[in-house]
Length: 333
Image (cartoon, rainbow, N blue to C red; front, side):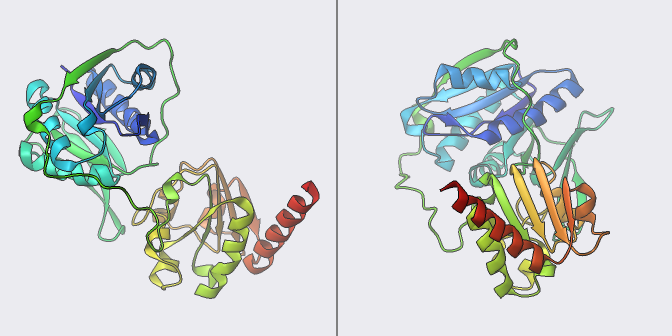
């Protein structure tokens, strides 16, 4: 029996990175409880190598429910399938990612199981003496951090903010079991068909997957000045993000917001211009590999965690960075 479960995600047979992030979270909880960790995957045409990768990244067991009809996410079908599996194995904790899939699936599953659910967690821990899951998440618009527990019902369920943790290193020596679970015909919802997925909606931005992010804050002064960041982003093949201050002022849309009340990102390079660095914003970029801060205030909190802190006027620094990058590209051609 597996005590801690994580719900893996796949697309076209390829595991999503968030599957491994969840295993890092689950591994810490399983070790604290001295119990086993399982990853549960629903889909079709996922290779043996991909299933073994879940073991290599921390799972003791992998439950793979394989059926062509379950390849695309349909909430009712996945929820039915998982509910049956949960009743059979009775895990104490189930973690999923706070992605569109996890945010849709977990409430539906929680109702079926009469279980509690905490959404969009940024921290998880085990309460000493009770084995209750302590689930910490931003509340009241990100102004406070609330810790929640569900002591009376099992399983304890939570969704975890993507990019809020780093996957464990691969350990090719780890051994685990791959358990293939057949889908029950009665659990597959036939009234729903997936026709396709749109990612071209107006103002759509997938910041969580970006390798380079250029973000602006209150120091940008007005919406028109974000054109400077877009020019820089174009040279770096980057996406444009923003602090809550900039979004609240209407300078850029909410899909660009980074922080506890927005998106958590983990790019290879993050450049923050005119962002002082509130605690909420810093929590949204803490797993970035390299952080560059541009701010004329030498005491800006973002400077204190940056790998490169540029104390200067962003309206001089950002255009100069753009100019030099253009010159380097021209020289290369």
